[in-house]
Length: 319
Image (cartoon, rainbow, N blue to C red; front, side, top):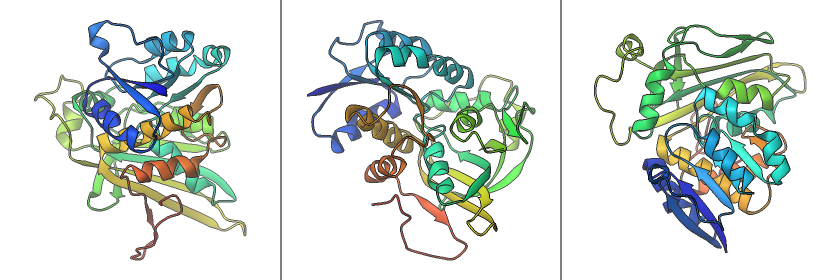
């Protein structure tokens, strides 16, 4: 029986612990709180990092032990550090998934799902709404200060976070929200997975107070868990006839539930030996995107596609 360690006892970690056994039978789970300072058991084969703070140092230590790693971190500096662990993961012969949460993570899977239906793709635009637990809320707050990251006409840009307002329509019941550029890791990972795409952007929903107080500590303690969040992934390109095409897919779900479902799906892929050694990103073409999204759907996250007309038909990755 394989042993999976879930590192982190927040709302995301607890949800992974409850849901992962529902999609894989032969697994034994170990809950681990990194704040205790204790080491993980020696028989762990996969570690899902779902704790607040940096993941890169612990990920490197686990790779040295030959443990596969699945990280839900969305911190840009942390993600950059984990991408540098590719050689260590290859040397250990184990996979490491960087960005296995709602964003980055599910956004990359949805982008790959949409791009597969196009002849060419030159733009990917991601918008997210909502937060999971307190650590996620603090990260969302900090993301609206400093510099954002974008890719425009094959050049990296760093516009001011909190700028670039755009009204984004998320799947119901969330609906429309003003979204702004933010310091997010999605553009970095999407660029590595979709090297031919010339424009990539990522935005988060925010109100005036969020933007005005982003450079201050949070004025009130965050809730234990946020409400219903959402993801919107828009890709633009051409069809086989050369016509211009825009595809929009997304989800509306509790952020912790969507994050836990995505991380659990990648943990299953690691357990089943379906991930290559080295660093993988959610949008990589080598992954079984449809299979991973089916697992995400089985864990209660319903994928939605914007068609412009009411429809009850499920999109391809839903069971």
